[in-house]
Length: 122
View 1 (cartoon, helix red, strand yellow):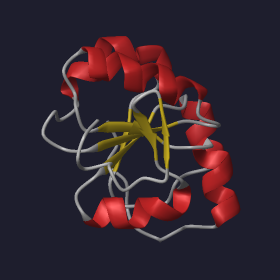
View 2 (spheres, rainbow, N blue to C red; view 1 turned 90 degrees about the horizontal axis):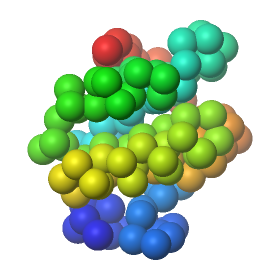
View 3 (cartoon, rainbow, N blue to C red; view 1 turned 90 degrees about the vertical axis):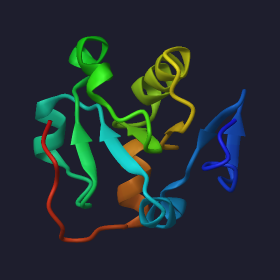
């Protein structure tokens, strides 16, 4: 497991699952959220943070190589199903600092973590 995500509360089978309240500190330390929801889902509800890269899960296997391997990545979707799949996928491709957001944007919104910063569209 990556040293970067060592402080995360939740780990299952060697995969870190940061919970929403842990994300602000991880972002301050250089992590980037990769939002893998489909466009219609992102139009309904956004994470509202500065460091977000959008790659829909339907295009992920075509575009994954555009992701920085030298930055810690937090994959996020609606509830955490696709993000787990693609966290495992990226680990198989040599990404060490990769995690899956526990509970996806559903739990993110419950924790009510929002800032009014821009997003990086991919």
